[in-house]
Length: 550
Image (cartoon, rainbow, N blue to C red):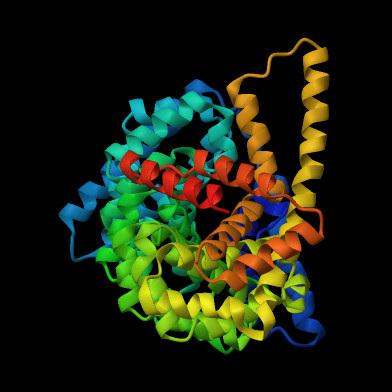
């Protein structure tokens, strides 16, 4: 167990290490170095070698382990139950005299270590449940916590769970029934991260939660309710140097919020939006120091975008001055800029984005967003952000403002399109033809594939058609829809100069009003889910009317 104690990752995960795991390795390696520094001079080097050799020898000398099968696992679990019971008895008998139960605790620890072998046999997990071992293990979290956490982390390893779905289901059910998340959170509250082993314990606890959430995404809401959300927010805002545990917390938080309105609401009620904004404000003027810290920043941005899917959190974001922070990030031109743009898109989209759209104009956001519309920054390309993603977010923000802004703020937005001899309209039309060509090429490929499928006698069902539509959106249709929406909105704004310029360039470059109308009708047909039917109907009619008058 020595190597796996230092590197608590197990053999399986070594390949393709994530930056979080690399951070753990670095910390572990630093720990080893600091522990080995006093060995100076040849003599000690010799000593060190001897000790290492001795440890290696011990490994080799160990007798052949008996084969692991159902009966040996049963025997192991029964031994564990006996030792657990004995330890409990002695603890009750001598509560103030640890020496009396220390030996029984060491015995208990040994058998827990031996039980790691069960993690290689997920089809025998049912024995852990039938012989009540899961219940006993959870009960031991108060006094042999680290050993239990290590074992649970190995038992719930996601690759192992997928080896035997049946065994995995039984184990996860039993853990959830025993309120595993609440107990793990209470245990983390007790651990002191200044102690290396306890810090590892927290890391492994988060791994257990991640494994279970990946195997059964439905447990996220329940886990968040059982104190996990509160603990994560507290740990993320703790004034401690950045480390692998903080990175892992940001990752678990993003997982909990994925596609889950219950956890998003919970985070909002716990002032989590403010916590996220405070943590992100660090990256307003400074880039992350390492790849790991950059990954944490992205996780926190993802968490924020997730939260903004919920209308009540849009309001919290507005009151917490989230718009001002994102606007500053766009101006500062640091690494955070790309993600800040994505957050603004999430904050302003749809009817729920109305207040944020107005506030964005009030804080002079138009001065920030239009330069990004006119020219995709070179830095973006360097950091590996696709041009399309940048242009999609910018066009989406402008489309949201055209949809939501009223009176004076709307006038300010439309005036942007007329200034400098309508340069914004020229750029809009340049983007229109760029994405139109990309979509036409994708359509050609898809038509070819459909033709081949029909020749082979395959049936083009709805799911196939949906697949093709998603591929078209991905190829650039979604951005093209946003661009056409902006074109028809400004053409219907009553400012004749804008309408003339759009049509002039369209005719000049051999474009067609018909094509734009067709794209808008298709857009209206596919309006997003999650809205009421009345809203969808009204919005469809509005878009089709805009297209007809184009």
